Length: 256
Image (cartoon, rainbow, N blue to C red; front, top):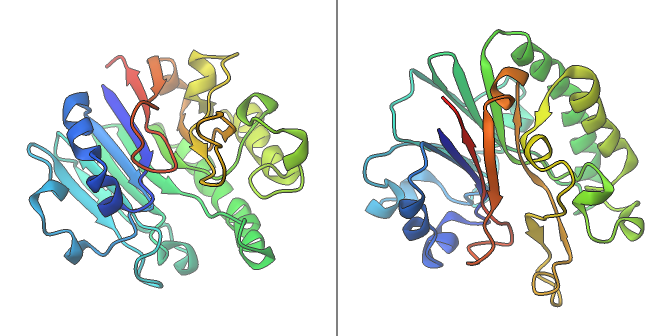
């Protein structure tokens, strides 16, 4: 089972850069997209309904052309969920979940706090609010994989300029401590670290300067799994050869 996660930074922009041609070659079972930046009625071109895929979108209703998540699946899900119960979060189009038997695949776009203190406080509130939801998933008996842009790096290996970013959103001690809580105390597993414990690879680069060319990046994109599913993760890769967005696609292959 192959799952791909990508923050598209605008699905129409990524489409113009060849992302759907690339996806067709990957033969993924499930594709999770974040930051689609579109309303579904704007995606009438057949390319946004790839052949052989069931396609589901959760757009932002509070601010058009903002945020938004999607799931493409080869197999039709038993159920698709798009709300977690907090309007401020749900209406920004940040969560969609597809259920296949005992497996849940989530496309999650976690808030960024980089635009200022108001959004950083919203991010902190979201971290606190969603933790018991994650606990519920972990204890549900279902296999979960939470794909997406979490907008947080975890360790020094996950960011090029560790020291200079300690006071910047996405690398704040409180944010990283929250990932410690999820991974080290709650039991969630970062699939990348499970497969490549010592690798230094990034999934996002600033558009400023030559960040991507010089690999001055951050690893913000994850597939976070319940332990039983993580044990079935065999290979993973971050695709950098083509530039579809300021993020790179992250692929994980799981044994079924």
